[in-house]
Image (cartoon, rainbow, N blue to C red):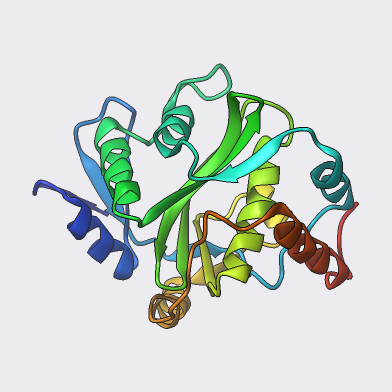
Length: 225
């Protein structure tokens, strides 16, 4: 872990991710960022996504709307906001501003969950070639981040992506098939993925996404209920 002393810009951040590093702050109010390249890295295999049947039923019947890049600044601000169960966050103002800039340049994307005109959850991350670096997710209503994750995986599969980096492995992500790999293995996966000509699309229709989600469920014999 190294403390950053230079003024960071969007191009430098892209180069850091290509090298396998990502930034975090100690708190929302921190003025200093740390770049991490952990010994063990969390990844979620796109062809090994564990889709719970209950979540699949919710995906098919929910009145909530899942969309891409409708309000990226709003989504990252929601991820960074203090809440009762999580009063502190690693997303400081600099990270928020840099990712909004990366979004404006076409590199950072959000998958958002909407209840009418109200943003109620989602996730955001960074795309480079065929690698997607998941940064943070949030739920203000039940299952919102899970709906966003399922839609993200479908979008990445349909767009030709090869790597979904979750940074760290949590029990929550492990339930969906995420696993840990060594730093050396991660760097091999990263080098292969960033060289791919994958494409993020904001305009995938819901039927196409749901067809791919159904394929994930059908090809996963160890699907939890």
